[in-house]
Every structure is written in structure tokens, then in C-alpha cells.
Amino acid sequence: MQSVTAISQQNNQAPKTRGKKIIKRFASFFRTHRKKKIAVLIIILGVLIIFRILSNQPHVVIVNTAEAFSDRFEKNVFAAGTLEVRDKQEFFAEHNTTVKEIFAETGQKVTKGQVILKTEESSLKLECSQKRLSCDDLRAKLVQCESNLRLLEQDYNSAQQEYENTEILYENGAASKKELEDVTRKLNQTEEKLLVERDATLPLLKSQLAQAEMVYAEAEEKLRRASIISPIDGVLLKLAVKEGQEVQTGTLLAQIGNPEHLQIETGINEIDAAQLKIGDRVEIINNALLDEPLKGKIEYISPIAELVNTSQGEQTQVKIRIAVEEAKSLGQIKPGFNVNIKVMLAEKDQALLIPYEALVRENNREVVYVVGQDAVVSKKEIEIDLSNELYFEVLSGLKAGDKVVLSPDEQIQDGVKVMVNAAGQ
Image 1 (cartoon, rainbow, N blue to C red):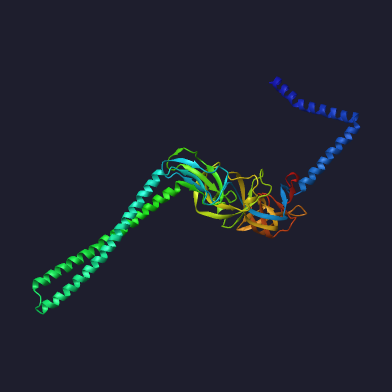
Image 2: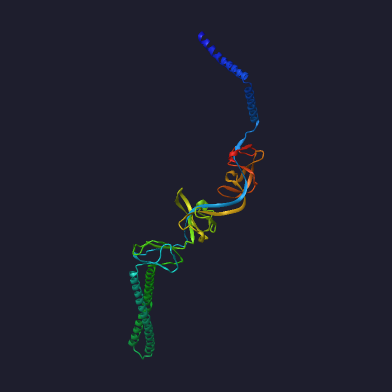
């Protein structure tokens, strides 16, 4: 027991001994380094003063800010699309045939009515000739029927007159009953022939002729379409076949259009599409090929939305069509090139703007937190109008140069002291 107590006493005395040694060394340091001693004391005193000052100051929140500023403002919708010919005409083989002659080359200018190519016509000409003969035969039958009808009408009128005369004679006893029966039978037979010719044969022949003429017109149209004829002044954009080539029904033969009349068809997401209207102005941009944007306007907005696959996955989009203006100044840009489009929904030459991150909505009100000259925050209610993906336009409640807090959290309240983060201004 005594040995344990002795060890314990030695252990209790050990820290005191070490403390005395440290104090002696510290005193020795100050005796040998007087200048350093004074400097250290000053530093310690300064730290204590700063700590005391800060401990008496209210809590300071570090914030990022931005200034409200006046500038031109645009509210836009952006999309991408491909230039294509506006009034493009495509021609396809309507039956199995052979390309016989070609009269133009791809890229060549063509005029309205110019023949571009011809396909095999012999079978179509034969069919057309047969249909025309059928029409001619029915016309002849119709003429004969109308002639017969006139004769039957004359016979009927004569039989009617004979019957009336015989009926008078019979009533006066000058004609027998048999004579009256004979003229009555003759009248009925004549009337029956007249009715058949007028109410059956004539309408049937007219109907047959009308049908035959329709079939003949179709045969003529097929023969006409055996030759591809340009419907407009334009350019042969594509020639998909060669002379002597056999083609199947539905094969593309040629494509004609005017590359000075261009359009863009593209899809706009449902949120942006809800802001669009017919006639909205559009800027068409291709930084590599256009020094200045082309102008255009929306001429069609689909009445329905569609689910489409995009590079970002499935999206609900609304198709729109944009008519390109001033296409004669295209220069090197051509149909098929990709472009970016900017639909201009609204614009102002001067507007007071604040960043999107500065606005806070509280109880159906728009507010911002403004940092004053004394670094104290004041909450201000503002009125906004236009907005885009970056800025809000402020109508009232702020002035240019006001410093607003960005992305304020729950620490930012009216009257809070803040310190502006210089790196984040």
C-alpha cells in the first residue's frame, strides 16, 4: 500500500514539475529575445482586441449580390431546325414502268410547263385509245336512243289521236267495240315503248357515257403523268432515276422546287409553344455561314401536340412552320442545312432588369432583398412584367444600381447585416 501511494504522489507532482520547466524556458526566451517578446505581446494583444470587438458585433451573413440595371430586353424561344424548300413538288411512278427519256439535269433551272422526263407510254396510249372508243360507241348509242325517242313520241301522239277519234265514233255507233280495243292496245304498246326508251334506256346510256368519260379522263391523266412536267419556275432539285431504268410503283422520279422560297418545320416543347402565335417574328441563325440572321415568321402552329423522341429523351412537342424571308440573300446556305431559330416574343429598348435568382415569391407577392449603404438588408416588394431564362423586368419598386441579394435563404431577412462576397459579386 505504501509503495502504491508513493507512486501516486509522484505522478501528481509530475505535471507541476513540467509546468514549472515550461515557464522557466518561456522566461528564458523573453530574457534572451527582447524584441521578439515585444512583437509577440503586440500580436496577442491585437488578437484579443479583435476577438472582443467581433464578439460584441451582431451576426454577419455573407451574400452574393447583383445590381439592377437598364438594358435592351428580349423575350425569346429557341429551337433548331433544317432549311427546306417551301413549295417542293415530288413526282412518283404510278405504275411499273421504264424511264425512256430525260431532258434536264439535277440543279438545272426549269420553267413552268417544261418536260423533265418521259416514261414508257405505249401501253397507256393503247388504254387511252380503247377508253376513247368506248366513249365514242356510247355517244353513238345515245344519239340513236334520242332519235328513237323522238320517233316513239310521234308514234305515241298518233296512237293517242287515233284512240280519241275511235272512242268518239264508238260512242256514236260508228265504230265497233273490237276497233276500239285494237286502237287501245296499240296506244298502250306505243306508250310502253316510249316509257322504256325515255325512262330506262336513255338514262342508262347517259350514266354509262358519264362513267366511260371519267375512265377515259383518268387514262388521259395517266398518259399525261407519264411525262414529268414542271408545274412552276424553279430548279430540278433531285433526279432519282436514269434513262432505261425500270421502276416500280411509288418510286421517286424527280423533285422540283424553288430554293429561293424556303421554310423550316420544327418542334417546340409544349411550355414554349403555348407562348407562340401566328405571325411571330423569327431570326434564323447559322454562325458558320451567315453574317447576319435571316428573317422569318411563324405561319403555322399545329393544333395538336405529339410525343417525340429527342436527344434528351421523349418530349411533348408542337410542330410549327416558319416561312423564310429574303431567301435571295442566302449566299452559301442551302436547303438541307441546319440552323438555329430565335422566336421573338417581346422586346423593349430599355428595361430595368434583375437576375432570375434575385426574385422571391411570398404570399403571391414578388419581393427582393436590397443591400443598403450600411450593409443592412431591406425587403422590397416589386412589380415585374416580362421575363426570360435569365432576367425579370422590374416595373416598380427598384431603381438602377440597387444591389439585390442572389438566391436568398432563410437567414436573409429585413434588417439583417450582411457582408458582400467580393468574389461572387
